[in-house]
Amino acid sequence: MATKTSGPADYIPAVGRRKTAVARVRVFPGGNGNIIVNGRDSNAYFGREALTSLIRQPLRVVDMGSNFNITVKVVGGGVSGQAGAIRHGIARALVKIDEATKQPLRQAGLLTRDPRVKERKKYGLKRARKRPQYTKR
Figure 1 (tube, helix red, strand yellow):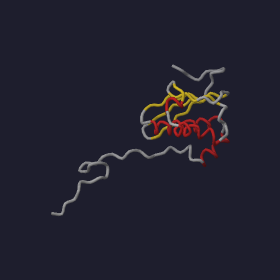
Figure 2: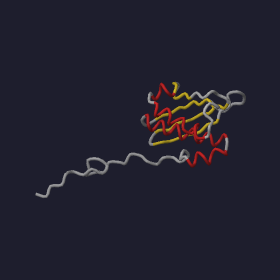
Figure 3: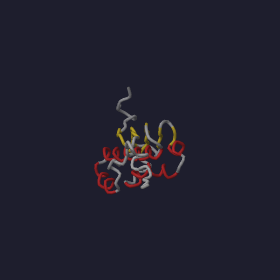
Figure 4: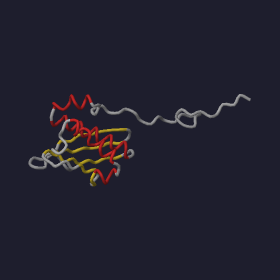
C-alpha cells in the first residue's frame, strides 16, 4: 500500500469529482510540469488540446505551471468528465500546498464541484423528460 513518504517522494494528495468520474491526484513539488494520467502523458491520454488545456487551468490561474509533476488515477465517466475531475483535484491540491491560492481558484470557479449529472429516466416517458406524442383523436 503506497503511503506518503519522507524524502524526495513527498506528494500532496487530493480527490476531484465530476459527473461519475473520480480522480485521485498526487502533486509532487519541484517538478517540471509533467502531468501523467493513468500511466500515460496527458496529451496522449486525452488526445484533444481542449481537454489538456482544461486540466492545466488551475496551474495557469495561480502561475505555477512548471513547478510540479502531477500523477493522476482517474476512473469512471467519459473523457470530458474525467478532465473536469482532474481539474477539480489539481485545484484542491494547490490549496493544500499554499492557502493563498484559495481566493483566485475560488474566483475562477475551480474549487466548486460541478453538481450536474445525468437525470434519470422516468416511467411512462421515453427519456428523462421526453413524452410520447399526444393524439387528440
